Image 1 (cartoon, helix red, strand yellow):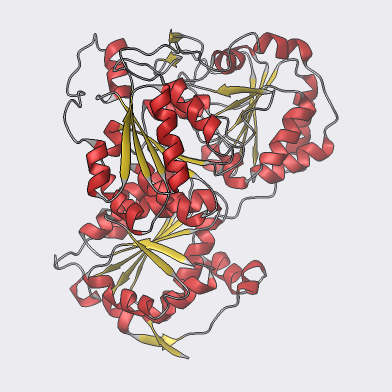
Image 2 (image 1 turned 60 degrees about the vertical axis):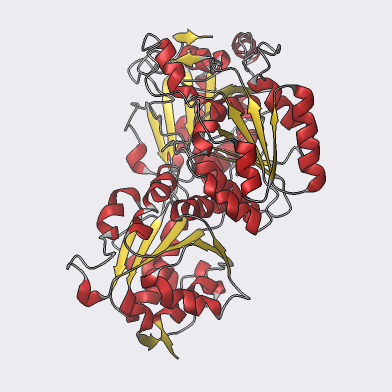
Length: 570
């Protein structure tokens, strides 16, 4: 049947099971928005305050649901406002399809009003991107884009459509959902594509070699990385570490890959890793890493990282193998499949002496619980949240000290419970991400843990929270400073506090009121608990401005480039 490009796009979104889109309209994408009006009973559109907010919302939706997120934007500045969100999704392997519209085909390359080469800009930060100039190719491009976003190592894809294509017509043949998992059209598209993202089947000889290494090991350590989250291999890794009786350390992106309360968990590893995790890494004789790319925040000094161990790296992406740390052995494949094969061929092992040695070291930082001049400690805030909110509460964070404190002290139980920007470290990510998580999980409690520096970057999304009546509780760790940067200035830069003070507005409670929301400023545990109770009872969005000490530090800390057990602060 004949359809316009706009109709074809929306029909393809329905084929892919899309029922919510985040975005912001503009001139070049108006044909699509006009068509979306006719589908408003099938696809819900969430209008954010800024395209960056929309990009983070689509990202948070994808992380928390496991589905592909979808984000719309217009050309020029609308499209470039997406780039921070695209890079955030790319670094953390999040499947989001970003759809923008460019100027008419005959105006491309002429510096037309709001023209930009989005494909060129986003090439380094996407799995794949397209500029669609032929309406006959649009349906296949959309289908291929979704397949690529969700296949192999997941990630973002950009589709930029010239405006005239959205109005031109072509024959459209619907593709049923059932065919997506068959050898039908989608497989044909991927096979003909120049982009092959299908992970190889794990080699059984590689599996057997790892099993032999495990049997020989006296001091094994497992790392649970972000690949465990993306593969939803939480049950498999739990079975694995139980079978080999191995302590397991968690990366920032791996939080929730195994239950934080599991007795084998040593806590976070790396720059702000626990003593148990970091010292175990230095002493182990076999390090088995699942879905961890050994970034500079984990393997701070690659030359001495796990210096006494045979390092085994399991990853879906061949390009990550030996990129940062040289491995003794590696397995290419989906983490869930690799773990399943390992579990099928492993017998129960015991490492009691090794565990005793590891767990003599602390797995969580102990903070002074006394108030400091009318301020709260991070542990007081996080303990109150954990005690008073449901255990399965979804937690979005921004980036900075509060992010590290949250990962240190919360015990995340399942993939997608923590929504945080790990690889790109995007300040301003959290509120949009929380919006996406709540839209995707309406029956779960969703909170945002943020800092006063991060929150002010995208707080305009409070209007989105209010308009859609999203009961998100925002906890601001307010030390009136860029806390993590100040910590580095204190420890490394001789206390030269250059441009990190935030001793200025806004008043966050008044800001909440301006957006039609309520808020409280709290300085002690009683005030904090009262504010949490009020927010929970009223079931509305609520901003809690928590006063913390200006020089509170994230502890422990290992300096960049240092040996993993060389703690600057304990």
